[in-house]
Every structure is written in structure tokens, then in C-alpha cells.
Length: 195
Image (cartoon, rainbow, N blue to C red; front, side):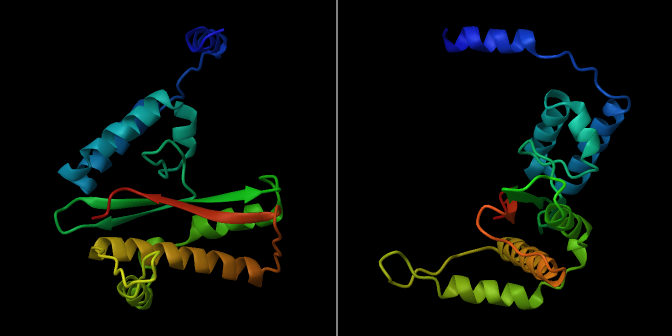
């Protein structure tokens, strides 16, 4: 059996899915927000979200509560950094786990911690300074100085990423959760181009 035959069989065996009620208005809201908040530099994002909503299964998009990402997954939390040109740098955070089930208390606590963080209210000043220092003192594989050139938006994004991670693991520890290899949670993040 070749790839084309396998693809045809998979398509024929897939269940027919009725889009949920309200999907059209949800798609329109996402597109409107993308146009008004992300500017012309992010128009591709609106198209990607529209495709995700239409092709990727409306029930997933409806369940996302506004945390849909342009990469096809629903984030536990999202963050936008407005840039001077009117566009935005979008970052999504997702709790992942290994050796656990989704209903495990550490997974539930981790998802709740990340999902309820007010990312817009984070004071990133000190962490931004730390990121700038780390980038200025970076060395290459050969051990020679190799400073990393990053925009203010990239610095802010990386500072938010570090703070979310630090806050998540500090809070899990404060709640008495213990992790071990194969029995752990991790934090995944992905962002659009933030240059």
C-alpha cells in the first residue's frame, strides 16, 4: 500500500464532524482581534488561526478559550508583546508531562498555575536585565565571546518565558510536588517572530 492509498483510506474512515454552534462567530472574533491587534505584519497569523479554526476542528478551537495558537495547539496561557510598528509578538505556553496522566494532581496544578498567571502584569524589569546580561556575555561553541543581538521585544519575550517557568516550578515545589525522571511536568513555549 502506498502513501496515497493509505491517505485515501484514512480520509474515508474519518468520522464526519459537525462544526459546533457558534464556530462562525468565534472565527470572526479571532480574525477581528488579529487584524486590530497584530497589524499588517501579522496578517498571516489571522489566516493561520482561521485555517486552524476551520480545518483543525471547531470543537478544539471553541474549547481553547481564546488560547489558540497559529501552530495548531491550544495553549494553557498566551502573551502578546505590542511592538512599536503596531504588530505583536505572540507567545503561547503549554504544560507537558511524562509518565503521568492528565488528571494527575501535579499536572492539574501545573496547568492551573500557568493558566491563571496574569502574564500582562508580570514585572519583567529585573529579568529583562538578566537576559540582556546573559546575551551580552554569551560564548560560542569554541569558547570565544559571541554576544547575542536581540531586540527589546525578544528580550521581553525571553524574560516572560523565564518568569513563567520559575513561577511554575517554585509554586509546584511550594505545594509539595516532587518530580523524578519519567514522572514530571515541563513547560513548552513557542512564539512568533519577535525581531
